[in-house]
Length: 297
Ligand SMILES: NC(=O)c1ccc[n+]([C@@H]2O[C@H](COP(=O)([O-])OP(=O)(O)OC[C@H]3O[C@@H](n4cnc5c(N)ncnc54)[C@H](O)[C@@H]3O)[C@@H](O)[C@H]2O)c1
Image (cartoon, rainbow, N blue to C red):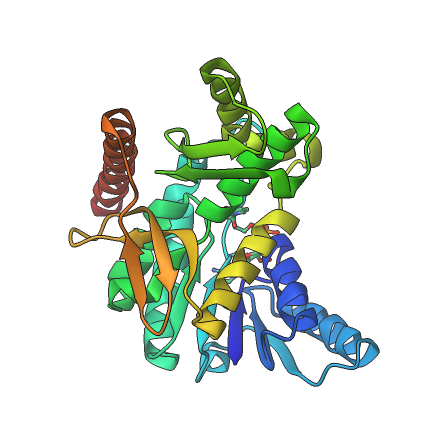
């Protein structure tokens, strides 16, 4: 499988290392506006492969032609949040990067699946969908599994449990209006107040890194990318929460089943959760509209 990693920064390079070391990609290309960064990281990865006894072809650069025949194109190029910045504030800068790369992917890797990572995630999935012209099942956003992992982490840490004792999913937007779809732990109940507190902790999960590192997280996001690439490769029916566009071109979280084809599994939403989902969808749609108005000015 050939994977193109567009953006060789923190998230892109970390994901590339995971995909290489777990032998998901036989061929990896790292692309970045900073060609030397992409070449340097590709060289480092190639030498890691030697050390790990892995045969893989790894190259870096800034030439769009390197996308040729990629099975998966992961879009991590763009600006990451800085302290005090919301994901939405990145929208217009990152939209021009994502739209350009989406059109290049359509030209050089027309059969690929695009995994969008660049923020604001759901809006960028919508942009990539529009500019690639791909069907919606081939333009997916990585965030739902990361947000769910953050909720699981908060629950496990709070109750002093193992990860395997916790089951939890976050849904809706990769932003302020995300919400807990479900959460349970083995052997005890989580009260409404406990869940509310832990859900809020998961929601601000991304901001915690910006305060500590001055930039966003990258190991856990790269694990999210890895999970999606693995599911796309194995086609074994793994179910993951990803962002995907609808008939109006607006992307929002859905549960996807990665079989021979990608299918949407309808999430069970009671009236309260359906309202939260509608609010998340409306927030994404509004951000998309703001972006379109901005680009017409
Ligand atoms: N979806 C998620 O859950 C999630 C999680 C973490 C980060 N992110 C987002 O992923 C993106 C990347 O984060 P990062 O931490 O890797 O940032 P980073 O700054 O470390 O890397 C971004 C890379 O993109 C490159 N780049 C910029 N403009 C480009 C262009 N026009 N063409 C090609 N490359 C270009 C930069 O040179 C840089 O190497 C950010 O938008 C961030 O907010 C999303």
